[in-house]
Image (cartoon, rainbow, N blue to C red; front, side, top):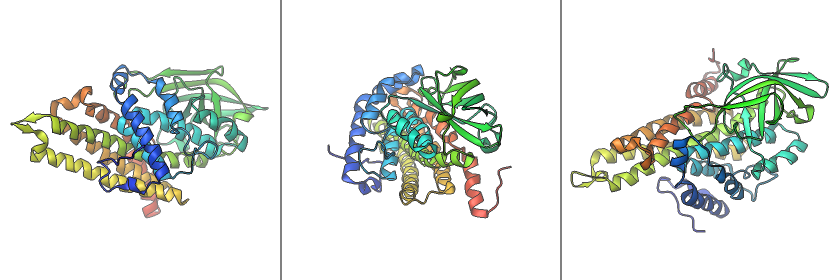
Length: 392
């Protein structure tokens, strides 16, 4: 399959990928353009998730590239970032589904599970046989999850009893398992649990009325005396530091998704600028529209350079919280500017789904907030700069 670089990759970062990586990326891009792009506006408007995309995502490797147990070939974090970018470039909700399934749910087991848990669960998640969710955020605990977690875990013999609530949990209305993070009543440390959603006392209720990432099925979860065997406790999750190790990986991929969202809006605006005629010529021939498009491309190019570098550092085994935090804070802020300029370039047609920009404009707001707000990521970087923690 011929690999065609994106015009929006203005400095040709994709050229650094291996031929095998380019081929895999080309296959994902072709499927997204052919089978996903034509259907997403309808699903977005109905606030439904297209379950028919799960098997193709698995077959194309999008749920398995990162893990030794399932990866079809050796690949780089930069390549996996470009996969996240491609998904978000067509639809940020599909990208978010993969981020939850592959990054958060599977990633929790990969980072904090035992060898036996990895062997059992990672292949099943990578194949799409099992759908996963990630339960950390709570109604009264978001940015302060390290200290403010209120969901509790109490050990009784060979079982753990979980009680509490979770909120904004993606995939949770249809997941088979949810990774639940809870505070151990005995030692006050945060621990992780693989919770089958069929367990008595587990209840998930869809959050209605969203205006961003409408296709993502976020849920409120209530845990009432949910009993989980010790064999389903993540054996290497002993404190919030282990939770943070999962988030360190996924935060960088959210930055990639932010770049993809910006590109999706930008590309839609470029298409529109070539088709829409005003004052006797395409609006792309007007200076003010070109100015908007160039500002979009500048943001995309700067952000892409940052996320490529962060992923290169991950490949070298040099991940630090402040690196992924800066990338997430910067890329999402530039994304927010870019989708607004793209919408502006489309005028009134920028607020209807037909021209795609409206969907990216709305979905950007969720990416701006989840996986650490700009403010919280700023404080992580600020601590690295000054040596002083300013979180409270």
